[in-house]
Length: 124
Ligand SMILES: [Zn+2]
Image 1 (cartoon, rainbow, N blue to C red):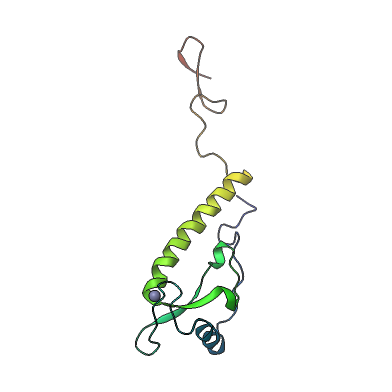
Image 2 (image 1 turned 90 degrees about the vertical axis):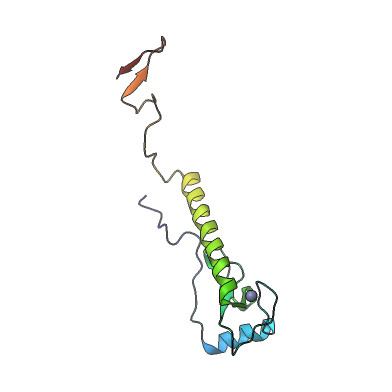
């Protein structure tokens, strides 16, 4: 697959997350987790800035697409996002015809074996 970089299909660029941007994201959501809708205690609980629509799924790296989330909530979402992105990439590769089949179809033109009209299996 020379023309498709598996790592970068559909992924948006990520800007630096400065303390000011973290504060901006926190203020926009009023300190409420965007995943479970419960308040985050910023002092006692670990939280991260979450992209509501993941960058790898075409989401923007923009405050409108960002919100604070409990670290534990984000872990589950990130895992699900990776699963969906990997699936989207596999589909895109297949739809573009960018992959080559690993094995020839049984008894297809590329196969070493063929089935005659009488049903006998012979070497090509
Ligand atoms: Zn949460």
